[in-house]
Length: 297
Image (cartoon, rainbow, N blue to C red):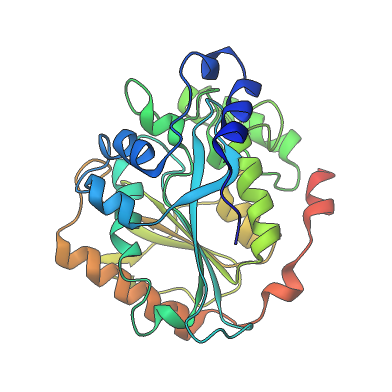
């Protein structure tokens, strides 16, 4: 488990990222983090957020907000339990993608989930979420989901951005792979935790996608499996295709309005059952360290 940072360390890290962060000190307690976040998260109360027991990961966003995580080891204490990395809010304007992870965290001690080892980060892009108007990109204008070091990134990422998106600022991949503190943290977390599966929540396509070595699910709740494509620098491409870790992308149907409570629960139940049935156990040991190779591209 990652150790929470003290206030002094957080403030020092905030100052190090530049003038924008120095203008307002980052929140330094769970109550303060949650007050900021829950103003933007549909259906998540201050109490819900504090109950999630999040702690600073040791990394901060471009603007100095701590990237908050929770580690939940298996109740059995088994060292070979399935390792699940659950992520929300990589795109800051997909509010439900972060909010639903807070909802799911209340069920981490359920019958099947408690047999797994979870690392959870509900808001990977806090600056995008907390911008004056929530935005897809981080505070540096980079789409974090195009900033991972997939093979040939230097050749492909900007070419795709220019030719396919028409230089869409919402999809700018950055100047170099892993140029952003948020994507660097996630890359390092993958190496530290060595997940057997990564669950990444987005919106608003209303489908499921899978990259990597696992049998695709038919449905989670009302969400059906449908390929959404492979993109240079995306987490699915990097994790699933390059690091050989299954990456399931859950695209909720609406970025601003949460699904009904029953559907939130159904997606969770189906997802956990899919992990039990379809994710190879113990594969993380073989998947460790493509990091050197990845950084050479």
